[in-house]
Amino acid sequence: MSVTLLWVASFPGLEVSRSPGLFDSIQHAKFLDSSKVMSQDYGSIRAKDRERRWRFYSLSTDMKYACVGRSGLERASNFPMVANVLANPAAGEVAVSSEQKVYDVVLKQASLVKRKFGSMGEIDARPDIALPGNLSLLSEAYDRCGEVCAEYAKTFYLGTLLMTPERQRAIWAIYVWCRRTDELVDGPNASQITPGALDRWESRLEELFQGRPFDMLDAALSDTVARFPVDIQPFKDMIEGMRMDLKKSRYKNFDELYLYCYYVAGTVGIMSVPIMGISPYSQATTESVYNAALALGIANQLTNILRDVGEDASRGRVYLPQDELAQAGLSDEDIFAGKVTDKWRNFMKSQIKRARMFFDEAEKGVTELNEASRWPVWASLLLYRQILDEIEANDYNNFTRRAYVGKTKKFLSLPVAFARSMVPPSKVLSPVMKT
Image (tube, helix red, strand yellow):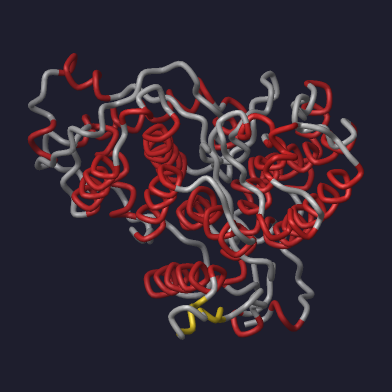
């Protein structure tokens, strides 16, 4: 199942496909052969023949990303875990829940932001450091990332133009890396991808974070993570989500599904918040803003899953909690049969209700972002939430009918999203939102 990029609004002229948020889908481009993972010094990149370098740039993907957490803007101490620990009868051990694992990553990233920039005020990137011979190449790399966004995620790209140049370039670089990563398991060469290839891609990521990018697109991200408080863990977790798609096609309960949604979608929220920035007027905790971003990703990913039940079933995949299916009197055989029954309708109503709950929690945090970054996030939220309405309008037939938001509704949603993006953070906060 491909990834959903969190913060990007879908292009209104296209069908909303598998990518809600940060990245719209790319479906026909040829992907970089990531099995050729190697590292080299940044300075050596500029010596490469330019024509040869461009051969590394092709991307294609259908991304999906989701987020963590259901507590919206609550304090970290009040974060409501579905289950803080899970008993493991077979091993006689106690295992940490998926939600707790994910929130540990949130806390780590929030701590990193506060250590570098303090808990108050606007986050600003370090200024460019002019390295002789490198600055021109780096600018070219960022421009290429921007071209990819402009071509395949038009609405989001326009939204990024409201940001500072530093934020624009950084979010483009993250966009490109996530697409390339997702394409490993969803691109044209997906059938040839092995766990070893993902291991090499992760090694390449580590080199990138050490300032040793492999190609120009890597160089853009390497520069970004050096100048913004972005931790490597969410990037590694996304790769782990790709590994999961290679070996897993069933999820026994929501705790397992939740972790998958974090890997393939929530990670983008954690990567993106330091780039998009938190409003200097926000009085919410840093952790709560991350949690809201993660909630949006979870909501988007759950929406993808509900929309694509029939498509996934045709590939032998069922991204629905097995225990909840059983409780509803359903099984995989019912999904493969593709018949809409009362049992199926009731099951879908409960799944849609859960997804909407995550959207509700996500809304609480969007206004806490930097003003220039809110519009694409609001657009993503409003557009993707409407897919749930379309599933209902189709009488819950997500086996043979694809729920999508029409062009008219998309265009009507964009000015609404822009208007909401102009609303500043609340000055009167509830106790749980205060630090």
